[in-house]
Image 1 (spheres, rainbow, N blue to C red):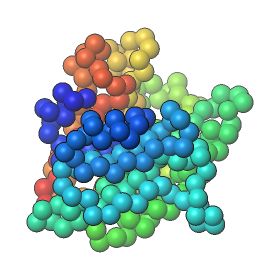
Image 2: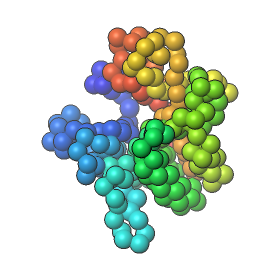
Image 3: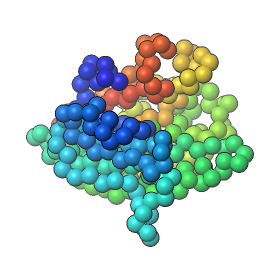
Length: 251
């Protein structure tokens, strides 16, 4: 990843599945302003915002309204950072890692957790959509929204990540005013995909899923100039089963 960072030189990084200890994160991202949130379950989740510009405020997690706390399974999945952008004011950047879930027998609890977290995510998105402050919500959403977002959509109609009830949440996000920048700037598809299984020839055959997104609220949409997916040149050169989604903004 360090080679990619050196080549791309991003101003802001929104990372998911950050499982490294705090000391490793600080060492690796030395010189960055960092907001990090790990999971209380070891080896799970973890989200991070790293910025070349100062971070004015950080909000961690999506606590339950009644208790003000999060269940362990939901921790390390949502972090908001208010970034001070020169000559542009404040940008709210959210890194989120939504549950993957599973439809396998005996794993029903994973889907219950996914839907519960999607409901809380959608409630928070309603608030951010209405804000005057530009906001980007990005990360591994673990949902392919339409047939254009998954190569083998017919074979995955019953799979977690492509269920109608999951996809309906992304419909709701659009209704709230959020723009899927990858689709808005990437054409009608199919693809470009952002995730491929390590198994078989999925990557070589481009049998992928588009499950990584950058969503912009109405205040941010006009600033986006282009969106690109940095798919590795070859299987051997991959440093993740995901590809980075890169958006360019001008304020």
